[in-house]
Length: 114
Length: 108
Image (cartoon, rainbow over all chains, first blue to last red):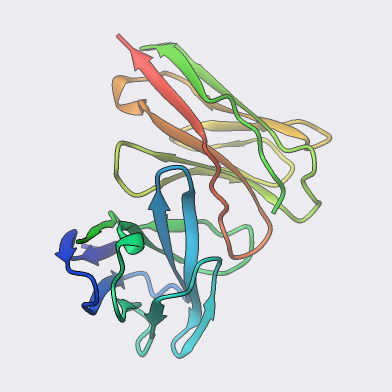
């Protein structure tokens, strides 16, 4: 099906472990984004990417690594997970960075770090 | 991005129109007004956006005041499935800045 998907949908990991969250979109959108949502903070931008091999930091990038070797995929890696990274992670994509182009969100990954 | 202000919550009767207000008094000329909603823990769902003119799509209508300092999202015939948190966002560039939003509860 066309759209934006995330995997896994739920993940429990231990402190210090590396974990990768996957995001895949079928629209060939240039821009992709990672947000996290925590109670009391709303959604905050972690990283974004303007195209394959082009990424940039958002508001809260510390502790995260991203890559984008293919336009359709934008994985987010927590190199050494911490409890403060327990959150719901949303991936989004957009045709353009211009304010006139909407972002479409995936269903989210609920990550728990124990 | 300009700050937006929304009421924290509102109720609406099923089948009636729901009018959600949003203030964005510091919005700049190149910032669009966006509305998203989030149902329970799902991903935010795009509803509508506009720059200056009023906009309508299959989900809702967006009314922007002439001075662009405020806007209203109208859900014409609210259903129970419209119960969600609605976010009004003033967006100029790549980032969407989500505030606390308005929790809308549609009652039968």
